[in-house]
Length: 301
Image 1 (cartoon, rainbow, N blue to C red):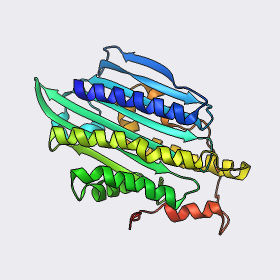
Image 2 (image 1 turned 90 degrees about the horizontal axis):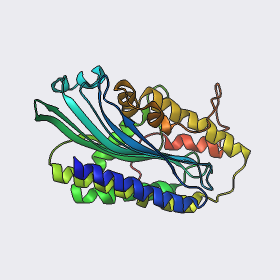
Image 3 (image 1 turned 90 degrees about the vertical axis):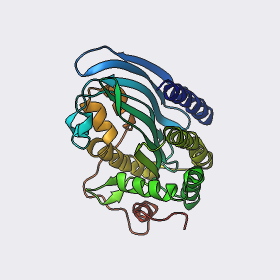
């Protein structure tokens, strides 16, 4: 896993540099951490980096982790019984950026690799990842660009790759209790284990493609004028982000159930959010327009 680990650490560095340049007012602060051998954890560590109160980003978090253990939680072994009692190792990069400007979308990306062994033999390995976009005041231009980048990076890996992983993203990032998607989607994949070289290359394409997809949107929206109405709606919709991450996100659940580092796992939470009972946007308003974007559709049709 050395090559994968080294590439992931480099990806974290590249994204941090690009986001600091785009923000122009703040820098990431690194919190390097390690896990001692204890309980179900064999060890490992990571680098959690947080940028706060910047010119563009209210909070941007990006973490690298490389952790291992000798026991997986029941939620993982129920679907994969061959993993029971296996020693495992997982490394990945995960990010969530919460901009100040309500017209600039929140975004998430993640790329990861998992391997499990028993008696010195590999019993499972796979790659996973993706990226998705959560606008509060959506622009068709931004959504089209986002999905065009996703489609184009998928193209070298087969004609069906974009459609399949776009649909997987729509299905995964669904708030079932509200029957709405978390945003306008993107790509999501897991358990990719067909050909190590090709699968690693695809994970790299997704990781590298994130900045191509997001930075042009940052440039277009970071200085868009807004007032308290838009700010309050942004905070209200951030509440939906919290709901998904705590109720449905498998990465959050796995991290907490496997004894992971809580502070790093929950770096995805927005610095501020609000809930309002029974809120309904005014008919015909810009806030009501968001509802039209929270159901799966073919954005490139």
